Every structure is written in C-alpha cells, then in structure tokens.
Amino acid sequence: MISGVLLAAGRGARFGGDKLLASLADGRPMVLASLAALTAELEAVTVVVRPRQRQLIELLKEALGDASVGVTLCPCAAADQGMGHSIACGVQASRQAAGWIIALADMPWVRAQTVAMLRDSLRQGAALAAPCHHGRRGNPVAFSAAYRDELLTLSGDRGARDIVARDAALLQRLECDDEGVLLDVNTPAALTSRG
Image 1 (tube, rainbow, N blue to C red):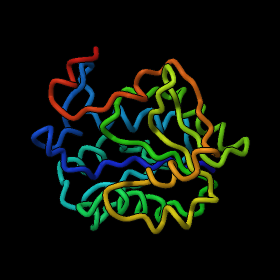
Image 2: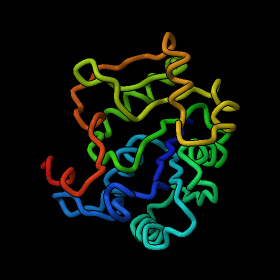
Image 3: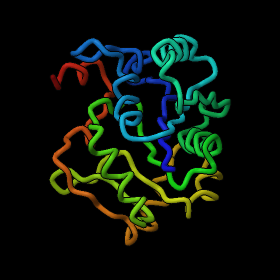
C-alpha cells in the first residue's frame, strides 16, 4: 500500500494566519482541496497537523465524516521545529506502507491524476519520483519504503530536500501537464491568481 502524507502543520506566517482554512475560488477550503487529490487515488492518507490547530482539525473531522476510512489525523507536537519533524511524524503513523507520497497542504491545485502517476511509479519499482511541469520539478514527492528509516529521523526545516538532492540519480522525473505541481499559496493574492 502506498500512503499519502499531507503536511498541514505550517504556521502560515507569510499568509497572515491559518491559510489552510482560506477558501479557493470554488469555495472549498484549501486543505480540503489538497486532501481530495490524495484520497481520490490512495487507500490511506495521514494528515499532519499542529495539536493546537483546533479550527483546522474540526474542519477536517467534519469534512471526513463517514468517509474518513483511510484518513488519519496526526497531531505533531514538534511541528513548530520544522517540516522534517512533520514528515517523520506522518511516516511514523503509516510506517508499514510500501511507500509515501508526501504532499503540501498549501498546494491545492495538484491533480488526482498526478498522484496516481506517482503511486504507479512507486508500484513499478521507483525509489524516488516527482512530477515535472515543462521541465521544472514540483511536488508532491514519492518515496519508496527503502527510505523509511531515513524519513523517520528527519528533523529541522529542510524536510526531505537533502535526500532528494543526494539521490538525484535515482529520482524519476515524471513530466505532466499539471501546473498545480508548481503552485503553492503563500499570500492571499496567490488564492486569486488562479481560477
């Protein structure tokens, strides 16, 4: 089983608040749009949150309702110490998986087809895979189970970038027409820059 890890524990400092609650043009909160691409193609998804993100946690619980099979909320006490801690927390919660697709909750325009492409790449034996749009590498990034121990020991704010850089020769770069793999939301203006 390939598991999704949705990193939703950021502080949103540049946005000026919890940006994951902000609505997209279609009215959906950003975090739910980001989650939908993962749940459409994966059997299990772990959403990593800060324990004190009460409003976000309640929104997720309410939205998941009866459809929460396969979706786990994972409060990460060390999330404020950086993305590496959040990744380790999410992988720990799904440590029996055969691989992970690690996605960012502030990238709501990634398509489900892109997640499926990454999942299939891992199933076919890729060690690492990432989508590319017009030659530019984007997110999410897929990691095989060979990286389990290393992902579990991540800390700090660099996330898994050092792993991807070190093992660039193993990275399957999957070209796609999904511009969403390059688009994250850091400011309120970014929400309206794409319809």
